Image 1 (cartoon, rainbow, N blue to C red):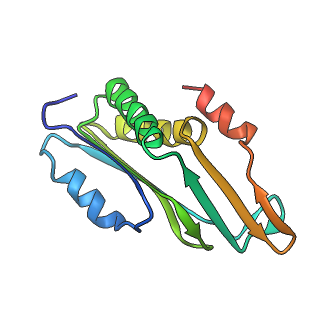
Image 2 (spheres, one colour):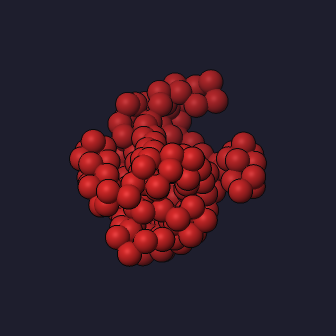
Length: 154
């Protein structure tokens, strides 16, 4: 990882401006040849039931450290020149942005791989708890086997 690398991890309730975050990463160095990004949003259904809202909780301090370890590992595997991970917590409604991952590297392949790796690991290794509110009641969301399988391939 170059000396100009910037790795940003942020957890909080505030929404984010994805375009601005991408521009900040792109502006880090002219050595960047590829930037990949992912925005995760709340969807209106899960497992065949309508979801009216969702709350995301975390363990302050522990969550940021876990995300920092994930980003550091990605930066070492793919020689990132910059990365940003923003994860929101609180109450959400369908369409709300929840997570942003931006990765930058000299080449697009490294940026794509690192972005996907960070999301796969975030879903399985970061301490977040999700409760969905539906007309049938409230449900704590369990980890999915497909998320574990995605993380295991790395």
